[in-house]
Length: 442
Image 1 (cartoon, rainbow, N blue to C red):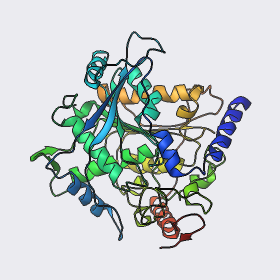
Image 2 (image 1 turned 60 degrees about the horizontal axis):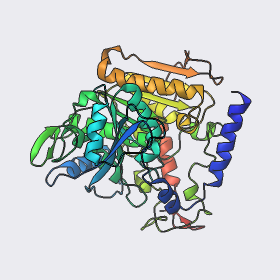
Image 3 (image 1 turned 90 degrees about the vertical axis):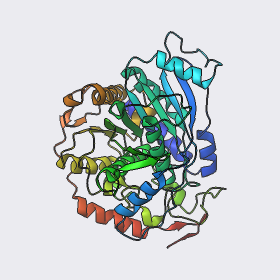
């Protein structure tokens, strides 16, 4: 890595460290504001009403109970109106072109008119489950839509700590079902699941991987391999593929790379909101207090919270994952190893010495451009050329000139059962955060 890139990453690391102790309510408020869509992109904001009658919550509750191996505490699933935005290329306008003052429906119709392929990306943003919104990831969703010629639906899910697990997963599942079975008065018509690829970044990857496990449960392990929506039984198909940038899959933060790769990452602290000096606010600590922003401590190693603990990925669609040499690297590598052993086609890339979600933080790096191109190609291949998708397991060197990569060998040398036990032990020593300087055990 050259000195300029290293200095840029260090400067960002220092800046992020200085913001690590801002109250969660302030972080959330500052990252959830919608902004006008300027330039060559269409954005159409939508609201998807929940079905008045159905079994979505019962199915999710069944999956939670099915995967649980120990007594766990969680919130009972509930439905609500789910929001999101359609994103796509807006042709023949300049970079400073303001968002037109027309209805959201007309924006959607014009977006469709500028769409040149049947690719539909279902995107779930990151933000440690408690920050972010579709507007914050438009630089990514718009680029993926533009390169693929398709459209992207970016989900605005319920945030933690106010809405603990499984709230966000409920929203993700309901939104996916709404794509393939649109509610009345939806802008879109039914989308063929063979045209949909799940995509995400960071903890959005947690939700995508948990959603895949939920669909797998319904299709393979549920007493009824379908879900009821408005009194009608409908199938729950897999999407064409799963494409996650730096997905988080271990909410216990116990896998070796969390400690081993810290010097490469931009995050100097793993969970500052659990430290004794973190400031309290109106939303954190939660009521009652928890030991994790996203879920109860007892659920930390549940497969729908930490997908790295899932015992099987057999039968799921092709998977694409890319990381830097970051704290979360083992999360995806462990899943990739297990999935590949069960016959799933996995494309896995590691970009040497680069941090978490580096293409979003440092888009001008040559490695960022390389990754985005690979990401978009996989998404398109899932829809148009699924038979061409082959396993990939490569590491790309830090100088930015390596576009071929070298073979990483195994996706992971970690042993699943040993890592599962490590994650459970880390869960068991997690402490409840009740406010500054007042951590307690369960």
